[in-house]
Amino acid sequence: MIEILKMLGLTILQNASFTLVSRARNSNSILFHTFAAICSNGIWLIVIKNVVTNFGKIELMIAYLVGSVLGSIGMHYFSMHFLEKKFKAKV
Image (cartoon, helix red, strand yellow):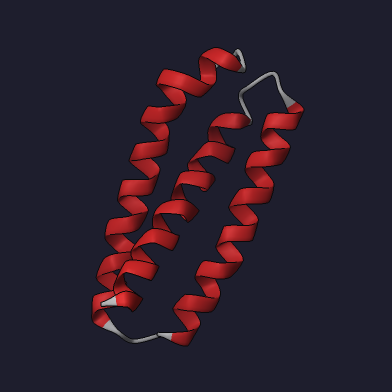
């Protein structure tokens, strides 16, 4: 169960940060985009290590899929309602 929660949490963070990078590209802030890119790539490395270590476990594949959807949609909402107003995004 710990492995599933770990995969779910990491994948939520990974996809949230990936979505943040995508949206940060349209902002006026290089610093904001830099921070988002560092987070996205750093978390991606951790997730890939976890995927390779647990390759073939169906329950972790499901956790990865659910986490990726939740992370992406959650960050999209958060960015639209909170971050983009602060960083004057042109999205």
